[in-house]
Length: 288
Image (cartoon, rainbow, N blue to C red; front, side, top):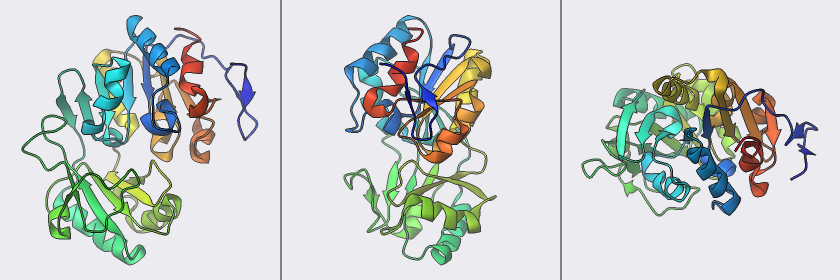
């Protein structure tokens, strides 16, 4: 594809980093997946070529481990995935939770919800939990309040009263509110919660996510890089939403999708083509 320009006038498609990456990380939704939430043949082909060249390709997502296999399997990935915005390090090939960071304890969950109920009346809550594998039979992975709205479809989640949702340690608290954008919700939530927890979002359809303070995709990817003995400056990372900002800033070369949020475009070293035009593949085809 020829080079082009992003909406803010920056060139994408021809700003090659100096060195070939030794580690590649990519967000999933809005980045690696196309607008119809499917992997294109071009993307599958480039990720497989990366693997054949011996360069690790890490999925870095807000998704929990149980949502990783449908993406990893077509790509042939068996290594690490950074899940739940950095709270969980998951090994795909062995279906093993390798590390969990920053659990939200019940008292913190209850305090956060109490503050949010005043700042954002009408919210509904869900909690993401993790066991020893992606679908640990001994863990209720996703517990939701009645009337919780899931922008990805209300096809999963064990409905439970609020006391049960908040009553066990969680890797992530999710807050939904109909009639507001995620950006509006995040601004209101930060006014009452920032400092105690971190607030981000991966969709702008009325859903925000709360994680332990300091836990981001950047911290998760840094752990992978350390395990693989790869310096940050030889890492390339791709993303499109505010939960990708820290990761793109940490990586030696951070690449935003042209369809990305303005926050992401501002922090990135480069803006590639949108996910509808295989923007990740366009960059990686420079080397692989």
